[in-house]
Length: 65
Image (cartoon, rainbow, N blue to C red):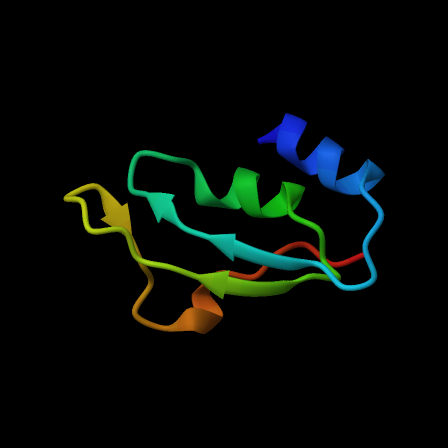
């Protein structure tokens, strides 16, 4: 994840759109702290048993700043 975020940081863009999903064995808080705060996020649900999709989309908030 750190490598992906680093690559985004050096790639020119006017507006960042981020399609993102998680599985239930990952530490959500640590991952969300790494995400850029100025992006538009599209949270998706995978069709696998380990999928993690919050009932309320407001549950996941990337870091700001």
